[in-house]
Length: 193
Image (cartoon, rainbow, N blue to C red; front, side, top):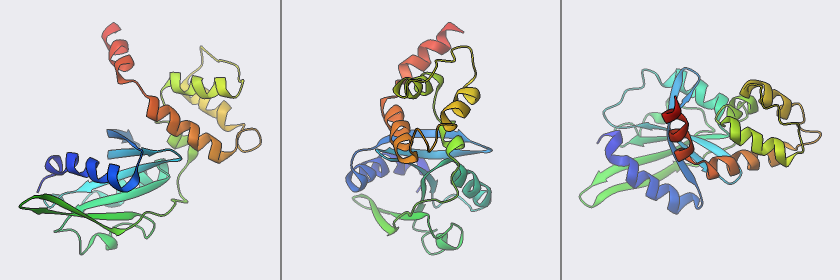
């Protein structure tokens, strides 16, 4: 069983299990790449897929990166890894096992995810594009800072947390922006270069 084979059935399972979500694939975070990012209305969840063909060689580094960027994390593993994955991810990570059957794939939630206390809001905001940050600025009547970098604008937004912008409100706004993300805009921008 390979990662590519289980993705679409996994996305169907996530829809059924978690309800409203948006799936973003292959997002860079630090020195790693998140296989899947699941946007929920109030949080962003990183998902690392370990098919039966994968090893744990890079997982300890990946766990550190996932923990910095996401509100919660899930390891989705083939049945080969199901017995040992708990030794390789923290207790607060969710675990979903996958087994290939004659009828397709069976998914089993071995452990639900818990809140990740190690995430860094600034890192999570790096997932946002500049227009998405501008939308959050507008919601809070902030100056536009049109000529400033994403990092500068992120710092200005974070300076308002928690006094003017409660953390839970900002988390929902980040999710809202990721739900609304329009990849055709990025394609148009790349075609201009």
